[in-house]
Image (cartoon, rainbow over all chains, first blue to last red; front, top):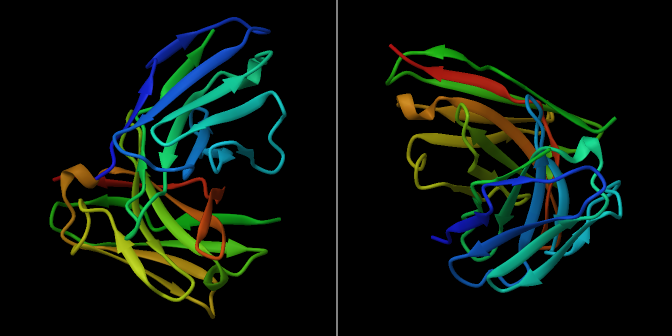
Amino acid sequence: DIVMAQSPATLSVSPGERASLSCRASQSVSRDLAWYQQKPGQAPRLLIYGASTRATGVPSRFSGGGSGTEFTLTINSLQAEDFAVYYCQQYHGWPPNYTFGPGTTLEI
Amino acid sequence: EVQLVESGGGLIQPGGSLRLSCAASEFIVSDNYMTWVRQAPGKGLEWVSVIYTGGHTFYADSVRGRFTISRDSSKNTLYLQMDSLRVEDTAVYFCARESATGIQSHGMDVWGLGTTVIVSS
């Protein structure tokens, strides 16, 4: 099974700053990597798929990069509504066995 | 509005069974890959199962042989039959649409609000 790791577990930043979140896969997932945002009591929201493609309606301050085993989610000019938990998820291989990372909490 | 609404959660004893439902609006369940994802209290997300447009089904190791994903086209609804439930199955269960082009996934783009399953004696 592909194991996903995220770092840091918690990231403290201020509004207006830039945040960089990392995700690492235990083996190559090519670019089959998505990022989700989850706020307390809410369902996850798709931000990025294909490692770097923004989902519909996602602000341009969110960007994704990487391939293989190393990925990054960058959030520029942090807004108050961006403080949440962020998960990466791989969907590589056959048969499907999707796995999520443990999450990074973005806090003020 | 495109949306998913889950139902069927509740309190169940270990070893019991429960069936979750996920009703879709403004899109056709059988034309999409549909998944179940769960989240234990205070924990992260765990993929549970997927059903593809052709009807093929796949499961996480933790639920294979106990859970069954299915759909009813006439009701435009996704289901998760959960048997032999364990305490560790306690979680909020989300259904989600997996966007895809051919066999290439584009992530889970529509999510329900979730339904809570508590397995306890």
